[in-house]
Image (cartoon, rainbow, N blue to C red; front, side, top):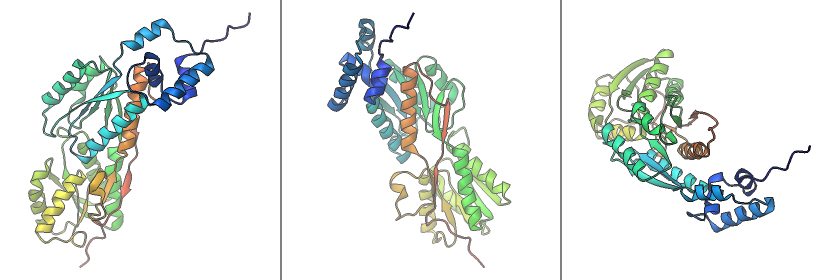
Length: 338
């Protein structure tokens, strides 16, 4: 007996229209915002395929909220601000809205946990967590209830899907840049893992690569930018130091300001590196040497992963480590001679 022809599904309509299943669901349910041109493509694809909406399926999608909750640690910073924009734009592409909770950058772990609880009370269908501080074990309970993706930080917990820039490769690449310029006495402003799961691995990788290639390293604890004056004082106590690596572009700017006030010429006397490479801090007026994170791609991949989980699918990788790019600016140069 010949197989009966298969009835077209929402997946077929989505493929023909060039949209996600979630967008087709929104057109079918008549709920939420979908652009007129997109709606037209979906309806034409459905007509061409002879797709007929199942009454049960219609009832199911009618009760959905099509909202994703996003917690962003500090939207005022270039990294988190750009990441939030990328999340919102990609969610709109899939037919979802983003409900956001954001801290001041000084939230304690308990505050971030409560912010996630608040988002779940708003009947969001999934969560995107963007925080370099909240530990994995505080996120796991939410991942057990809702599709959850951690965006923008290294994450290896088996219960949490994540998308992030490879921090260790970035830290090592910045160290290689200084070593290739000839620096052999380097200070690294370090951040402990307990303060940041992004800057912690980043600065550890810097120190490790420098030592692997025979450089001498002076580690200066510095989780907060407000202590940049103390970093500058410590560096200048060691005249053999020719370069300083910092945990982020904002840390680097704080240190550059301290050096400027003390008459230290950069890079003639000391080279300085940052990390993140996002937004106005990448201006040629500063010329900061940095490691650029692919923040737009991180946001896009994170939302794609959330939508796949909502659709009952698995993302292409449970943990996606994305490569960054070296920005070789004017704050680094060869070590001074003589």
